[in-house]
Length: 386
Image 1 (cartoon, rainbow, N blue to C red):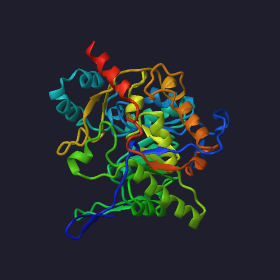
Image 2: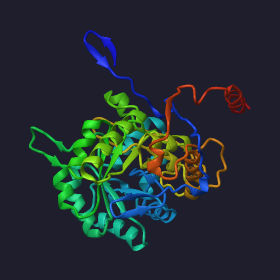
Image 3: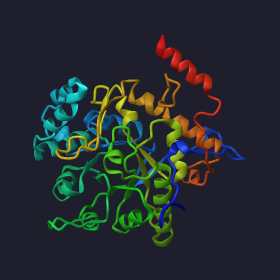
């Protein structure tokens, strides 16, 4: 703890860029590494979850990611359920000048959600034989979760900027995660949280998995707008500690999914080492050829009518979903073949499974990304000038 003035104290916290993993004395062949994890009754081959963002996941992407061994989450309050054919909306977002992008997003998201589209999108994913996960905010969960379950969704994700086991309001609106978990027969994933106590209460409420991360996403502006957030390495470690305590007490293991700020193989490896069982990918997959955002990426809180907490950013298109997740990589920045990067890192750390990777040695190393890299930076600057 450090004193920040008067009687106020603050503890230090760390982002993924502040830490590094120490190679183990005994290493393992990456081919012997197992990347599988479990979410409720489902076993997934890859610890990658495509974020419930309109620039990342549509029906086609949800099916493709499932076929590759991961899980994609479709946003039930996004463009896919507001427009029968959302292509025109995507085109308007992509064509909007920077100074008009926010207004365009706000206007497009004023279109009401249509119940028939909720069912239709879910049925399209399920009928293709894919694992179907869908996302909604706590305020809409009471209405949308039963519709999603009836349509055949396999996983329900209840997601907001900050999630708590019970939201209190003088306006009489109360969202109980426990009541929702008890009323829904499929796994309910809850997020986002960033502290030990919040995680412990959500675990007790019956969450099937926890999403960790408040504000680290590339398109999220919550930290700047609200001043709220915890650097991701510390947030994951705190939530994982609550998960481990809960497991030792109850015998129920609940996976932790790191959500936000993860774009390279190194980010993935460090998130798993901090205690995550999987990672949620937004901007990393918005770059895929199959992504619906046309090279753009925006936060789901961006269209908020009164207080936008996201922005539209250009991420470009760098490769296919398969390249990004499974390779082979055609770029050298670590943003492709995330699975092989994770396997190699786990092998170096002597971990055969994701849960063994939780025991990897972590050091605070803020120079890890810059030490000895002067020539790399100089060459990139030179390339930019040429």
